[in-house]
Image (cartoon, rainbow, N blue to C red):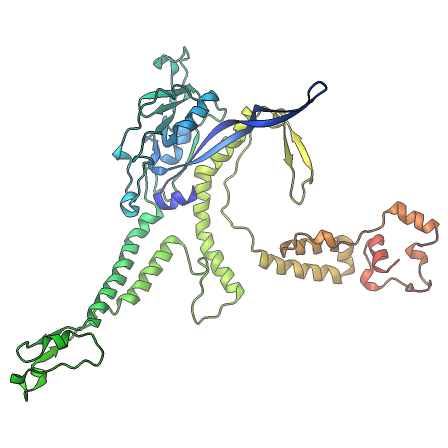
Amino acid sequence: FLNDGQLYGVSILRTLWKEEKNMRTVYTDSPMLGKTKTRTLRRTYEGNDVVCVDPFMFFPDPRVPMANVARSGEYCFWREYAGKHALLTLAEQGVLRNVEAAGTMPIDTRSDAQRNFASAGSTQLGTKDNSNVVQVDTCAARIIPAELGLSDKTAPEIWIFTILNKTTIAQAEPLDYDHGMLPVVVSEPYTTGYGFGHNSMADYLAPIQDSLSWFLNSHIYNVRGTLNNSFIVDPSRIEIQDLKSNQPGKLIRVKQAAMGQDVRSMITQLQVTDVTRGHIGDFGTFMRLGDALSSVNDNQRGMTEAGSRKTATEVRTSLEAGSSRLASLARLISVQAMIDLAEQLSVNIMQFLSDEYNMMVLGQDGVENMRTISPDMVVGDFYYPVHDGTLPIDKVALLEVWQQIFMGVAQDPQLRQTFDVVKIFEHIAELGGARDIDRFKLGLMPNDQLAQQAQAGNAVPMSQAAGLPGMPSQMPPQLTGLPPEMAQTLMGG
């Protein structure tokens, strides 16, 4: 989706609700037959089906900007090529009809894209052997059903139509989604206003790329001409075959009639000047223009300048400066497409979810167990904010900050009474990539076991431990402020 926006200037996602059924093996245990194994049709998936649409196979309403077609457009088409057996499976599930009536796929050369000329490929899949390939054109449109004789309703509704091979209607039914949008989200990252169809970053960089190719190719061609020496010779006075020899240290014989004459009058080398010597410098200049246009620097490409040494702070600052320019692009993509996508996906779940499902609640503040979610628990209308476009915080820099915080808390008794030193240490370990640090924890004795050990005389409270053999007369200062159980463990009690 994001790659299409950079290459073609538009990126499209199609969102529909999908119920998938497949054959599954079921084991039953009955008193009469014992354990039996049967094959039955079960629902294996129920949820959103999100598919990235080829920009050359998307036909939106041209009266509105592409980014607004989901909310303001009257219709949009998207095209795909599918095998007949996949369509027959959908027909068995009740999604499509009349699949068998679809004829042979038409050869439509108007669908070919300009990218074919560069890749020597084809936008139309299966055009060489179209006997088992079906062209599927799907349309979501706002219509008045009474005007088309589909029903008696006179209010506008969203319907979905599926046409096979331009001849057979396989689907025509209301698309009564609660979100009220056409089931697509569209983003034009480099839009210039309210027009329809804008250039992509690849289009803006194409002239610079063509110039770079010309600079390099012309320089190589000129150098190749310089290496291939050109001579002006008098064939009546020298042996041409000797001159054509490619052997090193070759001898060029002079004909008998020219013996004793000045050799320089018989052969002269042409002076070739490399007029493209400055092209390599111009190459770097145009590279910097491309970097400035695309907001990409060497640090983001994982490259450093040769012969220069930079500190980690300088590299991080340069990377953040370049990323801040890309953040505005991320915000635009978020407001154009991601907000609509989040709303469509969540509203579809609230509307169509039929069964309870289990969800694992994770996160630092989450409960690490399974929660059963029922359809009546997922209700309500929500606001979906625009993403600010910022990148996650650099964990290396954050690790250094938390190490300083840990040292400050460990050395200050008052801070130890306020902050949990162990949890800070675990957080630092997680930032450093140590995910399994819990395996190395010492198990603390529960309070009831401590009480039993105290009654048996194997343990005493910390306040009574002073003066006992092997125990310090007072608590070491580095343990001041720690929980009693932890201090007991550290002191060997």
